[in-house]
Structures are given as structure tokens and as C-alpha cells.
Length: 453
Image 1 (cartoon, rainbow, N blue to C red):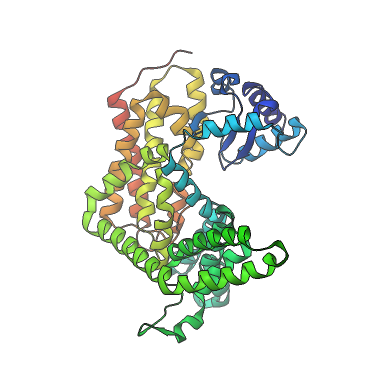
Image 2 (cartoon, rainbow, N blue to C red):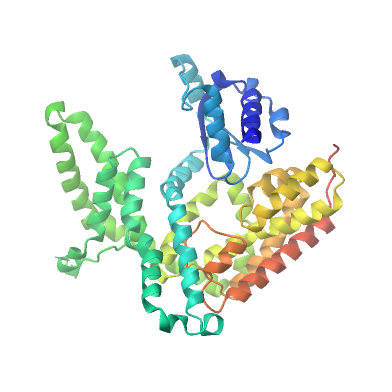
């Protein structure tokens, strides 16, 4: 805890003190800060702090990569030092200044970030579901555990319920989170998703066709909840305050529900089918070339934030087919980083860089690549290219071997092997090894300018 408190104190000093903070939060690996005055930032100091393995700026947000499990602790320590719950009062002039800075954000990036924020809270559930499903697959194999499945069928049944629960309520969870992100009532978001998923829809015929419960999956839910939030806000501004509490949810449900069933759910179904079939067809027919392109270009997408638009595609693939063939391909991008980092570790004479790599490699092997990307390969330039090329080689093989996982997203690296479909685990591990070797060789051949101490 002393190291955490010391790092929190150093970061506070580097960003100009608590009075310079507009917003403070964290994700899994990063401390995220928005400040009033960028000129008060001491970026040179922040980048060299022990415990900070990388720095990224997205829009008006400054992000310090401190590693998994540490980000939340550092932010908590910063808030404790600030003597508040992380909120800082600012006057209108300062707020206007911050809003002016926000104009420089890429609109596409903001929209995709909102989309990702709908699914990010679900990551722990996806991880648990995928790992439990992987355990079940192992327990069903007689060559590994003998007659376990025969002797303990009830245990497998219970584990099956645990592993599939998140998918049983997926649309409801997405509806609630989407309402939160787009500014609507959380309960109403869940209600809209419940309408689209209701089994009673199958008993209704519209335009000569029976309705399909759950058609369009999360895509339909997103479309409907966004509309619901818009209608709810408009009604709140129009209805008198004395009756708004009663009429708003009633009218919102009737109007949004009708439009959803008549138009948005069918539209969501078409989009969902196009995504699921299109992605599967591209991977099945594209083979080596598609796998190389997808994996080789994934890290540049991560840098721009455009990768967040892939989240619904992962979910749709699992909902449509029961497996995800895209995630294992994309995970090779991070694996290439591991090989590139090992090459840098063996070549560099910079002791601080060696220390950063040694600290980041273990989590990199586990699929958390941000410390390696932003702390090692990207700042050096050529190793980042070598890592992308190594990932492309691994992605090509994974695509050619048609490796798939039962999870949507949230896991990559070696842990993803536990969720790979039966019969493809060794292919995934072989692709992993090849991507590491390729990333190492490309980086070794390309070389890099070794930074001075």
C-alpha cells in the first residue's frame, strides 16, 4: 500500500495538483484524468514514474497505464489524498474551458466509446461464463478426467447453468446499461429489452408473419433503447411536472414498444444477420489472408479507439452460432507484442526499459497488452510494426485452422485457451507460439534506436 500511496502522490503532483483535476476515474489498467489546464501537466515526469508503464491521450483525457489490479487502487489512493470522493468543484469558466477542449475529440471515437461503455460492465460476467464453459468442456473429456461426466451429471448441470446464465439475460443487461449510457431510466431500458425478448411474441402474427422473440439480439436492443431514451427526454420536457412521473413511462413504453415491434426489431434482425453471417463468411472463405489482415491491423484500431465498434460483433457471433471465431484471431495481435517485447529486452541496454518489460511481460502473456504496447513497442516505433507483423502471422494460422472460442470478449492471451472449442485448443496454442516467434524475429530484424538512460 505504501508504494500505491507514493505513486498516487507522484501522479497528483505531476498533473498539477487536485485543483487541476476535472474528472478522475480508472478502467482495468489505466488511471484516467481530465484536467483544467494541460500546461500544468509535467508529462516528462509522469512518463518516468516507477509504476507507470505508458501514457496515452484520447481527446481531453490523459491516461496513465499502471497495470491490471493497480489502477483502481491508485485512483482510490489519489481520492484519499484529495480528501474527497474524487469530485472537484469548478466554476463556469473552467467548465467552459474543458468543454472547449472536448471539441477536439473525434465524433466517431466518442460514439464508439459510448457503444463500448454499454458492454464493458459485462466483462466480468463474460469472463466467468467463458472460463466455466471451458471447465465443463474439460470435465466432459474421458481422456482427461475419465468417467467424471457419468458419475457427476448433476455437477455438470449446475456448472452449465452458471456458465450460460449471462446469455439468458444478455439482452436485459444490455438494455439497462444502454439506458444508463444514453441518459434514460435504467428500469425502462430493461423493460424495452424484456419486450423484445418476451416468449409471448411468438404467439402474435404481424403482416402475415409470426414475431420472433429475441430477434436482432443486442443490435435490436441498442436501437430500441436509444429511441426510448430520446422519447423519454422529450416527454419530460413537454409534460407537466404533476403528471410527468405517471404519463412519461406509460407513453414511452407504448410509443417505443410499438415502433420497436413494427420497425426496429426487424431492422435489428437484418443488421444482426448481416453481421453474424458476414463475419463468419469472411473468416471461413478468407482463410490466411483475412486472418492476417484482421490481426495485423487490430492494434492500430486500438490506438484510434475504432476497435470498440467490434464489441457488438463479438456478442452477435456467440448469440448466432454459439461460438466466436473472431476473438482468437484478434487476440494474436497482443501475442505478437510479447515476442516483440522479448526481442527488445534482449537487445536494449537501457535498464529502465528492461525493468518495464520484465514487469509487463507476465500480464502480456495473460492477454493484457497495454503496458507492452504503450510502454515498450509503440514509443520505440519499429518494434510496434514488428509486433503487428507477428500478430498477422498468428492470426493467419488461427483463421486457417478455424479456431473458435465460446466467449464474447474480455479474455485473450493464454487464458483464452481455456475457452477454445473442443478439438482446437492445440491449434490455438500453436498459433500463440508462432505469433510470439514471428513478433520476435520481425522486431529483431527491423531493429530500433535504443533509448539513452
